[in-house]
Every structure is written in C-alpha cells, then in structure tokens.
Image 1 (cartoon, rainbow, N blue to C red):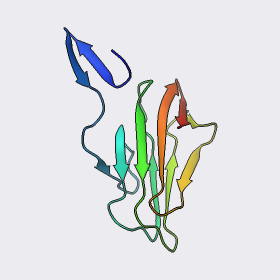
Image 2 (image 1 turned 120 degrees about the vertical axis):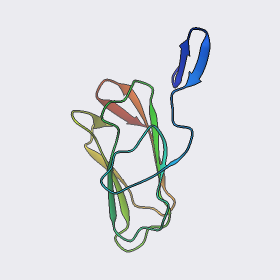
Image 3 (image 1 turned 135 degrees about the vertical axis):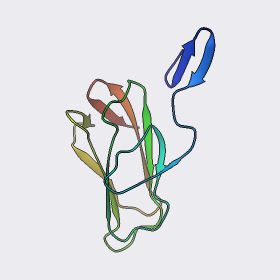
Image 4 (image 1 turned 135 degrees about the horizontal axis):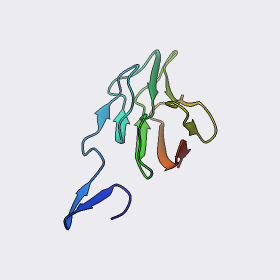
Length: 109
C-alpha cells in the first residue's frame, strides 16, 4: 500500500501518529512529529524508535534554544543515523527529519 499506509481487507489506514508528540527528556521519539513545547536552556536527550519499520519517518522540531539548550537525538540499539550514533539540533526552531531506510539504518532527509 506504500510507506506509512496499511491495507487490510481493502481498507486503508495510516501507520503514523496523527498528532504531534511533545518531546520528553530521556524518552524515545515516536513516528511522526516530535516537538519541544517550551524554550530550552539545557540539554534535552531523546532516542529514535527502537523497533521501526522500513519507511517510518520521525521529525524532531526545536522551539527556542538559549544558553546550553540543545536537543540530542541518539540511535537505539545497533541502528545508526547516517553512520553516526547521534545528531544534535543547536539552532532555535531547527528541525531534523529521519527515515528508516533499511535495517539498522536511519537516514536524515
């Protein structure tokens, strides 16, 4: 049926979360949009989902960042992110979108 869509008995449904999800320090992101709902003055750490399906997308969006405000997104398990173990958002209102391209391989798009 295509990435992010499931067809069951002729009925299509979207696989991704319909509502944006607030980021919580120390918790994993979910498929779809994950956002900081307040200005950050300290490090916020999160991980990409541990059991994604090929084609899943995750977007992480910052709000205001000042002082030591940074959002660090890390891999889960043996996954990599464009060959790295983590990436960071250091710009106010910055964002990064990831797609789970193949097994153990998140790509930044």
